[in-house]
Length: 357
Image (cartoon, rainbow, N blue to C red):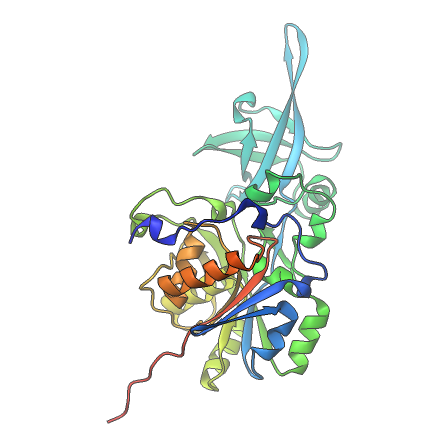
């Protein structure tokens, strides 16, 4: 299985830098088995059935991108350097791992000042990342971060424009509640309160899980044999209540449809490790063609980067050749791609059942 199997030509003009407004007015490509339908997200009502369970990731994106100043005393007096830090994840010792630019301008134990309230000391480095110890913790840290931090937009958006105040709303789901992600579960960005209400009135059920999306989600695959790729690990939680909701949906013959690849990867990790039961830990599950899905009966997701692990995931669900057809249609019809782009609803044909003898 070669990396080139998951490549396609994507015109630059199709990369979205702002989301649709309102959220549910984004376009929705529905791949129902072998048939493609061009819809909008609010048409989701016509494609999900009463009793279906949508699995939502309730992680909350941190305003994790910080700009600060390092001050150093020298024989010539004070010198200053601008430092950008993107927080990645908390470490067991209370420090934070961070991508620091430029890391070479920061020495061990030097302080970076981000605001009058927030500063951090470089405690160490590992694998090209810095370990920052902040002067604040808990609610004080959260408040200071919210005041000065910017949303950590994906690199393909950040290369076109800086994050601004709109992104603090646009790059957050309306049900986000558990802070800890540095990237949004972007399929969920298409839901607004009106669509949620309409789906509930239609009899669709919801459950929440938490997977804190890490910056590794944007890392490229660098091996030609994709089976040799090593996934980054992300922290997740499936509560006892969420596991019960999934078990009950399966028991009544309803479909379980994760909204986003993060929710799918999390529930399939749970199924692999413990069946349908409460689960907490780190997952580095890598889903590519040949993977046997235990829980997901479909997937709502955005359109992904060529040669990415997420292209491999949707190919595992729908089939590699079918995904090529879906993406060729999306490009030809000018669907908008990536985090702020349009959505797809992928519904593979039902699995054949073994006839009874």
